[in-house]
Image 1 (cartoon, one colour):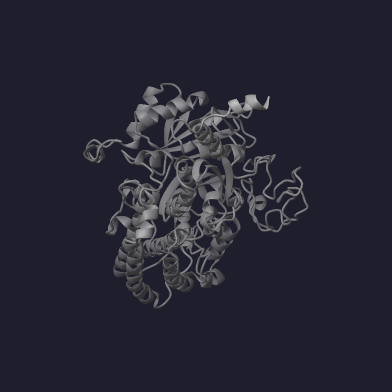
Image 2 (cartoon, one colour):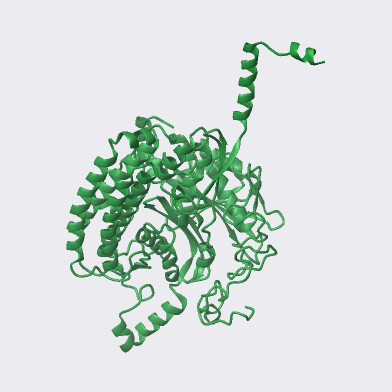
Length: 416
Length: 210
């Protein structure tokens, strides 16, 4: 019996072949790895369920919804102005830009989008571009930190602090700005603010140059991002990517150029776009967008006109307090606006704005009155994240952080 | 994707298609099942009368009319009206820079639409969200699971008959299974009320039935 077994022992070549087969079986065993919802590289509460073969990702399933607050349901239950604070909490890295996009959508519904005073439009552009710089500074800093360059993060946060100081002086809050109102702004620029902003645009140009020097030709950074997470133009469009992520994939498209709103058609700026659509291209696009935003800020400061900041319509904008206390008509307007909101016509509009993360759109379906019947928020991060299950497979685990960083998403907006 | 000179040629003002022309072409192709277009604030809305052919219409819009980008897909609950659901598709073409809105009514009994996720892959998540929030199913969808709410959640929160404060659910130890203490806040405006007294944001008793 034992002798028979000895005969069956294979020669060394066959044994090693057998061992290789056994090894392949062990390697072939797939492992499930949970990344997030609480992970430093998932920038909030994104959860990725990764199926791994060794270190290679074979399947990725993003799980979202951990920050779902039902913003669309809430919007159906309040007047248009009451919803502005909720828009702060969508892309909370650029609340000013959300305020502007939402107000423009409601103003389109009310039919007053072309009646906004020039000064209001210029201030709104300043808000959008400040928000863009702020969001990109954080996006780039966190991206660099995720792939191992911590210093950039500290530099960009120093600059963001300056933006927060400017925003605090402008709106009274650093984070949750709620600056716009339907038909205008909550307040005019404070005294001396434009000088502070001019000083800031000088400083930020230097800081962008520093970040550029630290990253753009940094061997480690380039190695970790170039040819990683390549998204072709066709895929980017098909998966509904917008903003810097779309432009990174060799698509020269910007809503500020294609469908200009506010005074973007009177301002001079370039639209940067990438070549191959890898993480490095998306990084370069964001870097250049900040420079273009600084250009826009400088032009706005030079052109900033005087005059009113709100539309001249008592049914849209709260009247002057003194007049409310002394005039009948203004008192009625104030009362009606506060209790019932603006009387919107029945109809439906969609307005999309070029936000730091991409196209933030609001679809408003109104049956008339001061409350939307249905308000849908088209969040850029939502569509931008849907490509993950397509892009991640085939990459290493360490590439995940680079790809997530380069897609630069915000869960507040994705989950709504 | 056409080459750069071809794109520039298509974007030149002389031959650039307008949304009206595109809507007309779509209407001609699907004679009898497309009505409209209705224009409001410069936006065109086409109504599709046969819900079962939405995927076909979308495929035509994408391949023949260059609508390569599904901006958004959403649903509206026409509570206490028939048909109960309206699905809204916002489509856009990077070749001609034109927006178009397609609307389809779906009855409550049916509550199902053919998927367009095979036309635009971005529709996958949008349809999952529509299912999650409204409970409309998409036939042929590769992976129709809840996306924002958790798996096993029994309600569809964006329906008009779902209260703002939430509903208690059967699942133990899950957050939000009890109504919010303030019924969504005491000073919340009621949507769609007929008279201003009912719509006005006044203090409400959280325990009283509305």
